[in-house]
Amino acid sequence: MSTTITIAQHSTHPLTVNRLGYGTMRLTGPEIWGEPANRPEALQILRTAVESGVTFIDTADYYGEDVTNRLIREALHPYPSNLVICTKVGATRRPDKSWVPYNTPENLRASIDNNLRTLQQEQIQLVHLRLMGHGAVPLDEQLGAMFEMQREGKILHVGLSNVTREELETGLQLGPIATVENMYSYAQRTTVKLAHGTNPGGEEVLDLCEQHGIPLIPFFSLLHALPKELDKIAEIARRHEATPAQINIAWLLHKSAWLLPIPGTSSLAHLRENLQAAAIRLSAEDMAYLG
Image (cartoon, rainbow, N blue to C red; front, side, top):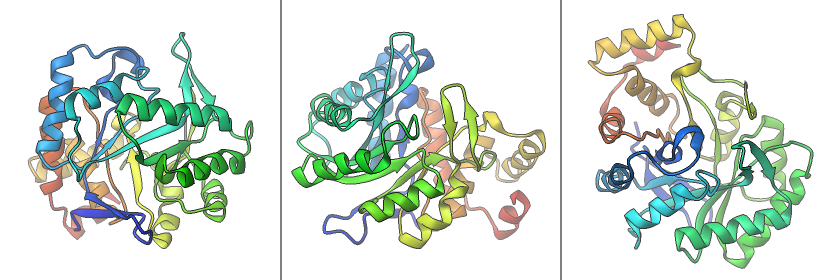
């Protein structure tokens, strides 16, 4: 099992990172809004992640809003040379905590400028365009704005998030797509409808990502697991003296060399537990049992 993965491998500026990253979304307050309940612990989580070998951190300026970006800057700036900070644009939050599209070319430019400011960077290494309100702003207009900012040097690499197979195929025709970020876990592999919209699953695009050498970055939750799936993952966890969450991470790492999991947590203990999942070796029999 490979321990690293390369983003934009065929470009002039490939980025190689360790294959277990960290997603910052849960560092915010309830409903992904406001400051963390324990700010010192949130800062320590970020520092511990990097000290433990995490070289890929996922964030967004609409987490909080701007909470995770400011935490990252406070905890880690000046950034280690091998650290890749990936952000997302295409959405924003209203005061009622609802999620809404923010994806006109002007919106996207404003978001990139805001991310550059709050992260205190001159260039963002990887930005995911999160698709929301499908059809409201044509995909070619959204990606066109992203590629324009890439040419200007504000963005190094462009990725897509929350995409269907058809949308990814279209995106690949419009320009170089470095990465894809979709909901994906052992128990949640296909499209799921949530309160704030539809989330396409990773299984729907994984083979396409593999064909094109594009890392697929899963964001996931065990909350959608069916009882029979929980039973199977619990059995494998018992065999390896691990937790179900650790086995979910290990399953992703073994499922495909093109998967880059980014498990998030607001607990320092859970962070250390998640990182230990990279050392778990699932056998062919384990993977066959899980399915």
